[in-house]
Image 1 (tube, rainbow, N blue to C red):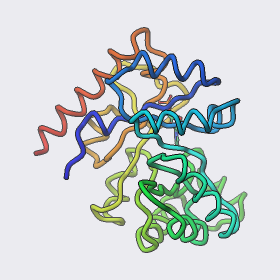
Image 2 (cartoon, rainbow, N blue to C red):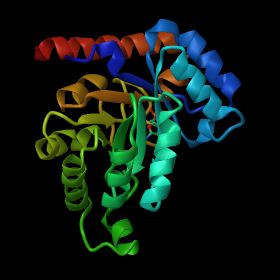
Image 3 (tube, rainbow, N blue to C red):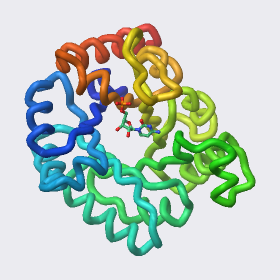
Length: 236
Ligand code: C5P
């Protein structure tokens, strides 16, 4: 079943306290159904309890923890995360890590893999001991993710079309780096508008500052959802 455009918008709760997150979620109301919680909020006081509460209140929660450890430790962590009732959890796309996460996943939890961090270029990979280009490593890891039964990938919208050809239709592609036309790019180097990201094959868009730093966050979220809906309607 196709995902409703509004459910394809994931707002990054990049704030430093549970109180700030609660205020933002209250302001966004029913305009937003999906939230991403990263290190900053998850590891602030009460952050993980808040993730559980938010999931229990009927919102979808994406816990962006980018796990990577020995398989046994990853599996135990994934089981604990599944009990929070969240929808998405990220792991780094190393075969052992992905396999452990997929095997330990329970209930509604879906595992997303991060192929290569978007802040890495070929020279960063070289410094880390890899003799391979970023696109080649991303494609290799995407194919491994597909073969291991990972549920989706986090990637830039620019990579979406190429990775879609590797993983097929079943995996969800989740793309940050989204900027509505005219919005400030902040520190994002490779940005796309919501419509362009949907056209490139993204299933979910992660949007932080263009919504959370807007004078009217709800209006900003609604405008982005409307742009996504318009593009989806064009394609069907
Ligand atoms: O504020 P902005 O829209 O740039 O926020 C994007 C969110 O997506 C942030 O939470 C950021 O950490 C996350 N992200 C990203 N680029 C990646 C992976 C995650 O911007 N490659």
